[in-house]
Image (cartoon, rainbow, N blue to C red; front, side, top):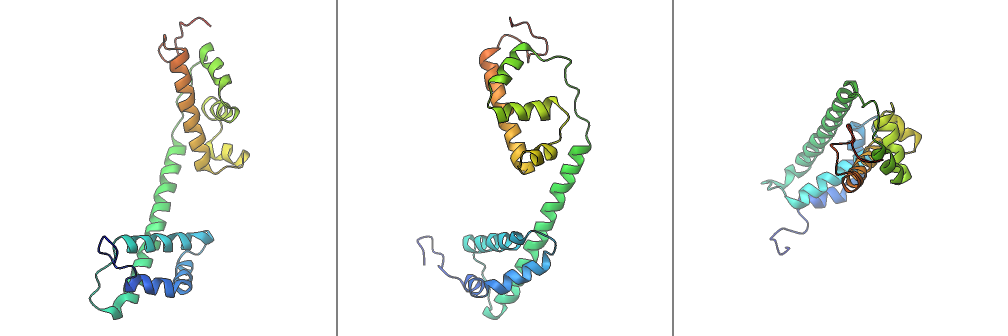
Length: 179
């Protein structure tokens, strides 16, 4: 037992480790058309959950049936998460983008030029241009998630620079700063 009182290897974890190839094959059969590593990821998630909160099963003979049910539920959850994400992404992409101001403050242009080139380019193409995150990501060899993170960091960096350089005006839409 560990200091927390948990057994190091519960019967469920022992079975999961001993029959890992069989359980991976079961998940891959349920996840046809999904990336190969999806089954491995789900199996690792289940294993972690079992490690953190081992089940209290009364009959050892039902361990395998319980484990298959748990894996089936985890595969279903995987599809639900993917569908929810895809729905949200589709809904977001259908929303109109807010109109950009007719001009950009000279302060913002100056500070934008001082950012890292990848941040500056992300802001120019995604915020000031008409590129979608997916298109930008593909043209730069990134995933959509990585491109979104880059855009977030670019906004944060520009905001920080603008707060330091141009604190006198309100958001640089009606700039009164000396250029």
